[in-house]
Image (cartoon, rainbow, N blue to C red; front, side, top):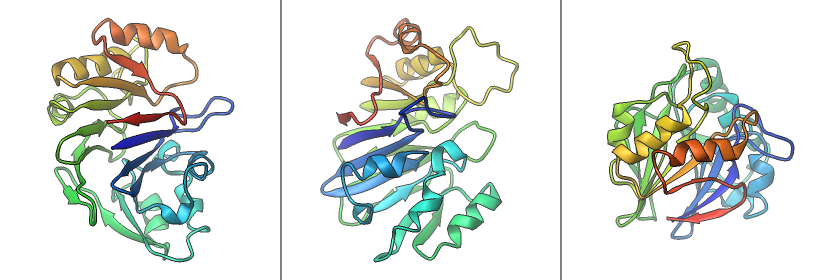
Length: 238
């Protein structure tokens, strides 16, 4: 499997960047995993929009789905499979009403075998202010998990067990005061998830532009050495 990082920032991009979005490629199939701001411009550097075979949205916050609301203007020739949460209702209804999308509602524990590709995608509910799912892609021999947005969760850790690559929400440094309502993981918690789950490699994503990336990386490597911060438009082979 190959993952191209279309956007790595959240909740907003830095200058010249894009928010959360990834292109997953396997056996000639192209799957768009989240579609944050700037993702449609970036993906067209790789393929046409008509070449996308399916879209998966972990949740319906704008930094993960905003470009999907305009993708409908470009799709003229086919109905695109779209997998997404049922809530928030307003955002769901807007997307479900688009004739270009064939929508399927996600649920906790759901597994999807993609047609014409030996790829299974499974989902795990995370802890976030809105309905959100981590996604695991498996091709029979290799696997990776994208955490979506989440607070630290033992359930998510178990979902990640033994995966080759964990692409993980890394929203805060430990210096950020926790009032009990932070919607994302601390970087140290992302690293702890990787350590406990015995993953092969940790890739930090959902990077808040207010932080220096070196500080994020140093904090993560204190608990999990094989950690990198993703680079936009870089390809990672699983």
